[in-house]
Length: 144
Image (cartoon, rainbow, N blue to C red; front, side, top):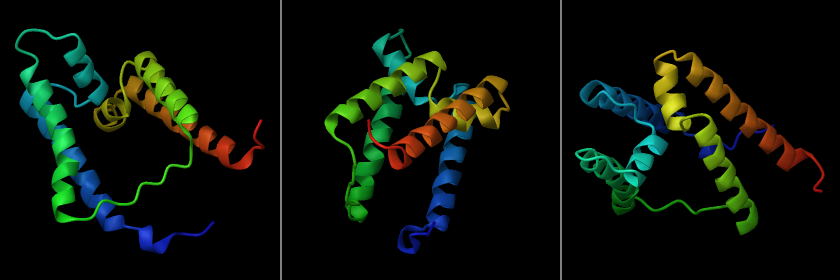
């Protein structure tokens, strides 16, 4: 195994992780809610009075942040080593997993782990194991 040194950015990753952690902590402290993207977007699909504005603002921030980044830096070149079929299947599997786990990686992995939630620890372990197995299967097993 080799390290792609030009792409190795520990300080940027540390800063990004600190920002995500601080934002999640502020969100729960100020709003009393978990910053789980699937729950926030799901709440927009089943709107409850007085609960829509903050959800729209949160999602708008998710869209605006990369747009603001693009003003100051070049977009990285996207590279996706899969066709539309596998991407659609992967997206559907992520959606099904999110429903079964009662949350997504941001809700369980960022917010749940920081609260030492046993359910989030189990969900995050399963998310990670599924990811590891998928990468292993795609890179090391012969295609069927």
